[in-house]
Length: 221
Image 1 (tube, rainbow, N blue to C red):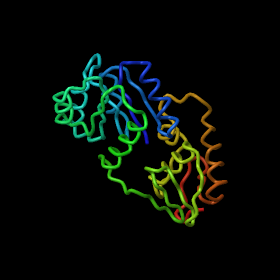
Image 2: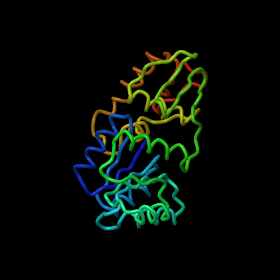
Image 3: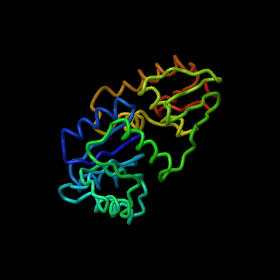
Image 4: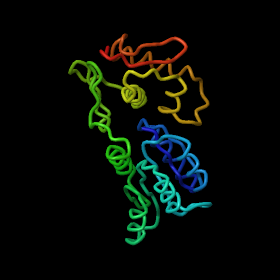
């Protein structure tokens, strides 16, 4: 999942980014409403974590603008405003969920997965590609009925490929979808993780198309 966090509390935003990345999410961060709205317009996200009290544009305005433009990316409002009418306004503006600070991080992660499952891009509870079966909510994968143990990042990469069945995805697309747009490390990390996956789900499970990218084989590994 690729998530946008929009929060002007930089320490909190940094903590959310670190925690969500540890859970296998790719995370972009904005610290004001103007930048948050721009990122949401320019990129495709599975969910947006949106504060209300933001400089530039507040969270209500960001949410309302996206909905008016026909963008129905799931939005979870995360804010210190805990009044019942604040929650009513947030949900009526178009938010999919509302969570008050301070909140339980495991609950936040569970809520994000829940809103993304019922969000703008409808997806099955499980994905099946050849002899592979993936459960995105539980981050579990089976090959020929036998469960395969994957790290959070390995699962995120496999899930990204499984969501593009039959498509060739470039290294840059994988970096943007599995890491985040600010990743400045060695892009060859993609090849490293492809190697890890092949070792676990089958050497022929992921095809390399030289100069183009990678594709999850229709028949699995």
